[in-house]
Image (tube, rainbow over all chains, first blue to last red; front, side, top):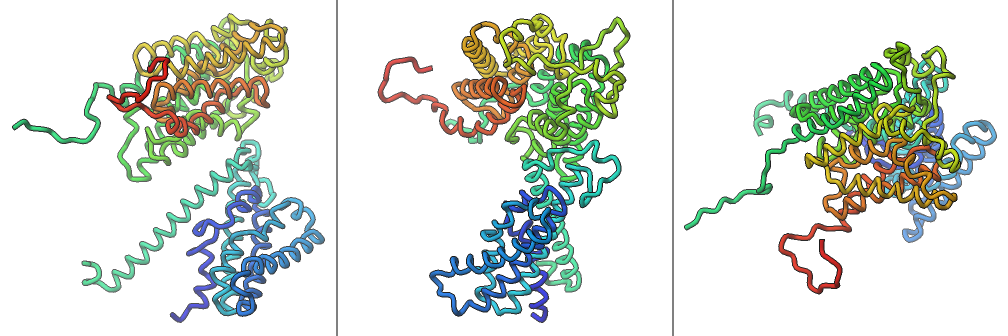
Amino acid sequence: MKNTKLNTLTNGIVKSNPTFKLVLGTCPTLAVTTQALNGLAMGAAVTFVLLCSNVMISLLKKVIPDRVRIPAYVVIIATFVTVVQMVMQKFLPSLYDALGVFLPLIVVNCIILARAEAFASCNPVLDSALDGIGMGFGFTLSLTFIGIVRELLGAGSFFGLPIGSLGNVSMTVFILPAGGFLVYGTLMALVNFLTRVAENRKYEKKSEAKPSAEKEA
Amino acid sequence: MAKFIVSSSPHVRNKRTVSGIMLEVLISLAPAVVASVYFFGFYALFIEILSVGAAVGAEYLYNLAMKKEQTIRDCSAMVTGLLLALNLPPSVPFYVPIIGSAFAIVFVKMLFGGIGKNFANPAIAARIFLLLAWASLMTQFVRPISWQNGEAFRYFGCILKGPEGLKTVAAVSTATPLSSLRSSVSYAKDLPILSMFLGNIGGSLGETSALALLLGGVYLIVRGIIDWRVPASFIGTVALFALIFGAAKGNAGAFILPSLFGGGLFLGAFFMATDYSTTPNTKWGLLVFGFGCGVITSLIRFFGNYPEGVSFAILLMNIVTPLIDKAIKPRPFGFVKQAKKGGQAK
């Protein structure tokens, strides 16, 4: 196990991607991904909070009494969410309006609580920071991905730029909640299918490298 | 010693097959198809063929991609495609039936396990999907053509852009009888009831002619393909609510016939609310199902934002079906009630 640090970092991107594999934080995922840019911004905000809260909780894990750990986590998370909220309101007011109530709701985002509970509270600081970055990056990637697909199908544009005359035949349903579920489910199936194919291929390569006994078994 | 054969159900078989039933449904839809061509010209036939072709093609490709046994020979995809086409306005561009059929087959039917396992009627779900996707294309209706003036190919002008593609847009669009049915008694009284019954009026391809749908529906009931309970309770409930609504507005009878012959009521009640896998198993369950469809349809028509509510009603009741089946259980053969409390057991 040489690459544990690297594994911690990349774990959240594909192998246990919070959106497609752990199915955490589905509420903001479905709500804000009507546009690619919103997905990206939401992902960035969550990544920042995740990184800071993971580090903070990991630092304080010896101090926080076990019985009140959840309220303590929520207070820490809420602090960083407030920071993000204020910064965004000041410098990116249009995005702040677009994300609406889902920005303060990051406080109760289950990805952040889950990583605090499952990882940061029992791992060293550096690992927790890497985990936060990896998970946040995975979340950002998936949200942007869903946002791109929904925006392309629903409004015929890519990050707000209209693509040809695609807007004339775009399907409004993909911007509506129903389309969100549809795209989310389809992409989840696709991601799981692709990772399974990749794993199978890896397994086959391994068994080719070590023939005979293993293969027959 | 007697020999006993041990086997799993079903123990009683008849000669009905899935493809046989689906062919009967296709036959029963023939009058509606003829009516659609008569009232909207050959573009109607083109849309129907496109939709059926896309549905069958989607099922074929899905089975191919998933490495499953081909199921297109059971004809159910053809029925779905045709029903969806009959639910579309006569002026939709070519891509609407293709995407709609593909959605119906892949997302509503095959992903849930194929025929018999779909949670909702594929054609209904696809219609609502299209309504949400292209709201304006799906709610603009054109008037019937006139064969004397050589308009048989008129609506081919819609093939790329929908109603916009026609040269005289304003003269072409027409309101459907339902679009302001709720407004007043005088409006309802002025509606051309005979045209609505025959189908010579704006609306979706297959829904305008109540006569053609009635012929097909009666055929299905006589042949024993569908149970009379759903259409009867569905249509009866809508009529009852129209009566109540009319009575509240001062003229009890004014809304009944327009409510029955306008919109997609007959198409929905006979052909789409009677899908086997999405309706309850018991006779009482079917009555409840039809009643629920009728209530939701009437509420949407008279109080909702959409002029027509048949498809939403059927979709919602499709989703409620498992609950109805849970509440109303079939009585096991030979079951005797413990204490008789008057009234008749069915």
